[in-house]
Structure formats: C-alpha cells, structure tokens
Image (tube, rainbow, N blue to C red):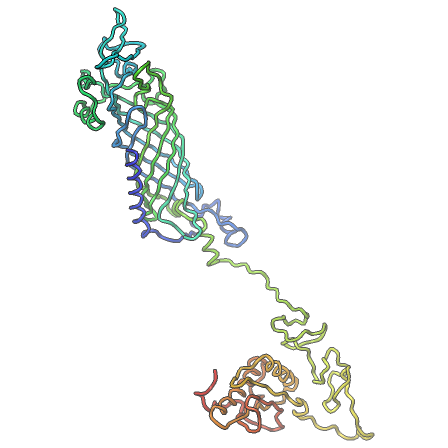
Length: 569
C-alpha cells in the first residue's frame, strides 16, 4: 500500500510541474512602497550607494486548505482510504525559513485479517465477552493435537481449558492536531535563472494531538461471532477482509483502550504532545495561487492511537509493545497569498535576482577616478605623447617639444628664442651666427617671406595605390602644422603627381585630399591655409610635396574629385 501512495505522489507532481512552467512570471522588482517603514532607511542608503545590501521587502502571508489520505501506523493494519483535511497560515522570515501554523483533522481506520490471541488483555474486547471466556494472567499453550489451541481459564471451580474464541481487531480513530512548523525552502536561490515554477520544501514542528479511538466489537447489542479457525481456515488477506466486511456493521460503538483515568485529556479526549516532519512541492499557478503536494508524518508518544498496545504471541503471555504509534497525512492543497502593497512570499523569490538586476541595469554607478599615465610628466598622456620630453620643456598637443624658431634647439634650451633664418644654422645653445660686412648696420635686412619663415617643407609618402596616412606621414605633418601655427599668415601648396590615366588622376586627388583633411581635422588648421594642387607632372605618384605659397599666390582649397567612381574610401 505504501508503494502505491508514493507512486501517486510522484505522478501528480509530474503533471503539476508540466502545467506550471508556462504560467510563471519571471523577474523580481520592488520599490519603496513595498519596504516596511522600519527598513526604509536601509533602502534609501542602498539607493544612494552608502549601503551594499538592499532592504528586505514586505511580503505576503499564505493561507491554505488541503485534503488527502490519512492513515495510522500501529499494531493493527490500517486502511489507506481514510480521509483527512487541514488548514494552515504561513509567513516568511527570510528567503529560506518560514513558520507555519497548521491544523489537521483525520479519520484513521484499521482492520486485522488474522485473529487475535491476546484480546482478553484489551478492555475494549474483554468487556464484550461472556464471563466464561474472560480470564486473568492467561497463558496460551499448544494443544498438542489437531484443532484449535486451548486456553487455560481461571474459573471459580479451578483451571479449565476451553476452545480459543477468535477475535479480529479493528478501530476507528478521530485525530486532530495543531502544530507550529518551521519550513525550509530548498530551491529558490538560483544562480542562472530568475525564478522557477515549483518550490521544494521540508518542514518539522511540534504541537499537540487529540484523539478518540473506538472499536467495532458489537453487532447492535450482541457480540460478533467471528469466523473460527477450526471451522473456516484463514485464506488470503483479500478473501478474509471481504468476509469480515460483510459480517461487520460500521458503528464503532465501543471505546478503545485509552489508559483510563491516567490519560491526559483535552475536551474529554486523549491529549498527547506530538512532533512532525515532512516534505512537499508547491506548483505556481500565478503570483497569488499555487498548488501544494506534501506528505507529513507525525509521531506521538502513545501506543493507543489504534486502541491496541499488546504484542501478539502464539505461545506464552502477551507483552506490551515498546514502539509508539504514528500517523501519516498525504495531501493536495490550494494555497493563496494575501496582503496588499507586498511582494509575493519570499520563498518564491530568488534573492539573487534583485542583485543581478542592479548589476545589469545599475541605478547608481560609482566609477573610480581615472588615472592616465604620463611617464615624462609633460601633461600629455602616454597614449597620445609622440616623444619623451625632457623635464621642464613646453610641448604641443602631441607632446612634442616646442621649437618656435625652427632652428632644431627646443625652446627650453634655446638661449636665442627667435633666431632669424638667415642666421641659421645655430650652435648648441640655439644662437645663430650672422656674418655681414662692416656696413651691414646701414643695410636693411631682407624682407621675410613665407618661404623663408617656413623653410623647406618635407614630403609625405604613401604606400603604393593607397591613400592612408601611416604614422611616419602623420609625424611629418605634425611638424609642418607646428610651423604653420607659428606663422599664421602663411599658406601651403599641397602638390600631388601623376595624371596619365583616370586612375592616376583620382589617386593623386586622394593623396592631396588626405593630407589637407588631416591638417584640418587633426591639427586644427583652417582650410583656407591650403592650396589644392593635384595631377602634376615631374614627381612620384605615391608622394605629396609641400611648399610655402608665394606672396599673393592663390588657389582653391577644395576640388571636386575628377573620377568619383574610382575614389578610394
């Protein structure tokens, strides 16, 4: 019978779990309206980034009603079909632990299919036997022959033997208990999923059990005449139970053995402290409703739940059993969450869900102060610094030491900050050597032009059939840009070569355009300081020359591409 019970338990669990997954609402969020007033300071600190832990939200209570199968485990075989029902209220104290107050009412029945040999020790049965069949201090001994065993009976006339009268134990026990249980949730903390549609839990608790047990010893007001072993051989269990069922009524009129005046009582019934353990699964139908399938075993320090406390011995005197009765309740329940402005009970929530949501979509992000390396300390980070500058030397935006007069000596070491071009080259201190005749003082110095100011400008080389500037080319252009910034009135002519076919014409245009765009976009120079000149002869197709524009020289700073369809992107 027990194997069928657990098979039913597993089958129902599987069906409910398949139905529940499609109805689960994923995600856990709550706001300040769901935080109790006493925990609002912690919630505010968490949102402001001064507390690492969010406040625990207010969560709903659960009330439930259940029905199922109730049976007693004792000295007499129980009937599995006995009914039971229960009620409970449950509250979470954390994501794992909750308390549940539960009331259970069950009716347990039992029927023995083998005859009893020690019924005369049970007051429920001996009180309904003829005086000739009652005895004290009985001893059962083998008869030594065929037929029924003999019983030695103490009578007024002495010790006699009488045939053994068969009795088949039965009982009906009405059991009620009220218990306080601690419930531990086993699967709501999940690292790779927000929520689950079912909930495993175990529980244990203490409480009190009240029971009243009676036996069916009389048929109306007369004693049953049970089948006798000498007349009706005991067959298999099913046949014997069918025979007893047809013989007995369903009155259960005789109080069972209950220790009489020594028993503790409550409301006129036997009262005993009890302890219970169990496990269950809840299947979520919505955020308010779930179904729960669970099995609970309750232990009572009493051996009279089934009205019998004597062991059966074929030979020798009957003795008291040393084990106690217990009862089992297998139930299916409907649970409802109640409470406004609260999240669902915490045992349904994944405490990691809130933390993960903050990691993925933070409402407050505290970033460390950026530290950018600048090895030479010139104020330009190493990522953009193009040279290691000596300490104390001013640099441009690329970290290159400034050389205002272009004499090759940085300003920080130049003792003659502006040396005229005609006095260069200079010595190590940046001082020029101007040789002039004795009357040079009366000869006016030559007028400086952009050609003399800018000097000879370098060329820019491209890779074959490419219009991309490499790092060397960019370094060259940075030097030219520094000179142009020092001479704001000067322009530069950008010259590209080759024009024998359309491809060469377009590539020449691409080279000139790349140089001008870099000087404008990256170096910050004005477009009108450049003259666009491409497709010239006498030069390398992969080279762009730069020269200072002559005074008054003009030209376009932008030119439409000659062959846009051949333009390199």
